[in-house]
Length: 120
Image 1: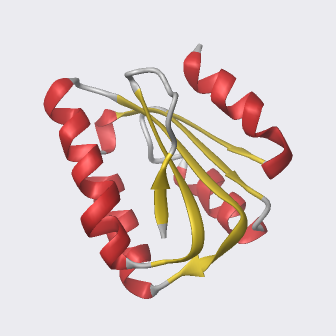
Image 2: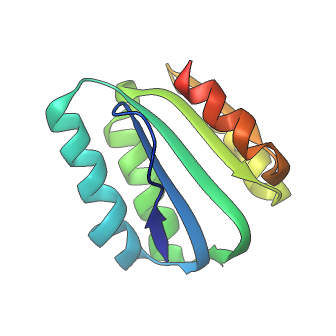
């Protein structure tokens, strides 16, 4: 499940993942929010928190994640992925090489720092 993170600046879109994240979560929550923000501005700063309640992605969610990321590749100004899941941190660092924007991985204990980095 994906929950929108409230209280972020207008140019920052954030979600917290809880339990298993599915393709339906992307299609009904994340993708419409990204599309709506891009209708209003050219770039997005994005916070993705995969905290202690996160248990994983299904295959459709991983496909939708890659698809939305690549469809709007130039729109991602800054992306902060906050997680202690090591394979996700490694994947984000690898993906950062193809992104024109900035991408950083943070540990769950660095959520405040990630928010601050996105807001500056």
